[in-house]
Length: 92
Image (cartoon, rainbow, N blue to C red):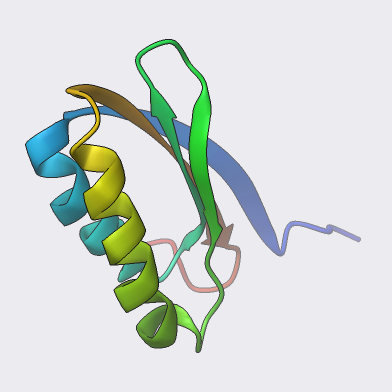
């Protein structure tokens, strides 16, 4: 019996302050993103946002305000994106 229902993985993206908010909004609307973590240039976590289906719409406005404030603080950020690959029907 296989337990491969899905697989989690992370990726790290580097962005400049002015592109931070747009990238976070883009990621929030993707269906397989489970968590977004924003870190500063020294690797310190500034904000961590768990995303679940159904709450993305209600979460975007307050998170966007927080991310906008963070983007004004510095120039270089990394976004760590935790994703979930659904096991069924994803092979195209």
